[in-house]
Picture 1 (cartoon, rainbow, N blue to C red):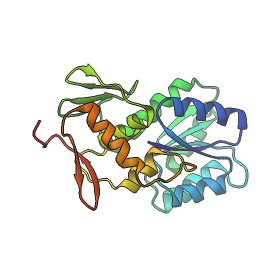
Picture 2: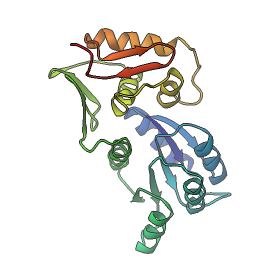
Picture 3: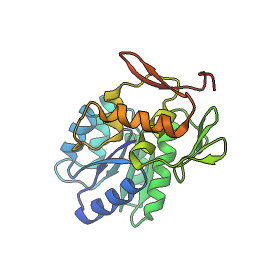
Length: 222
């Protein structure tokens, strides 16, 4: 899942990028409000982590601009502003959640996972498709109760399919939401990773939709 991290403190941005990447997210970092608006308008984003005190364009204005132009991805605000009036203003501008600095890194990860689940229509922390399950708290994947060992990119790809199961997703969409923006767009990499995931699962849950992409569904015979 792709996170747009908007933070102008280089040290904090590096720490957040490291933690979020280790937690299974693809992270795109920008450091000012204008760039945040541009990326939010023009690139695929599953969720945004947004600081309010930004150069060029403040976080509230970023929220206003993106929401007024139809951006629907969830936004988690990170800020040193702890007054209720500031929180209320953020929610009114379109924030979905709010964390006050200083904060625990794990809390940001947990809140982001919950926001993304809800934005894709999932209430439980466990995503399932037939015998396949993923615990979104620790990214643990099981098949009929047995742990399935996947690489980080395989886990990201399967997580995206689980969040959007029963819907056809194109190779381009998968790439955009699984890899960071600097990744080499080798058209074959998605097919290679998908083949590896299928082999490790050993059950035909992932369907190839010719000319369109892939669909994760439990309607295939097991």
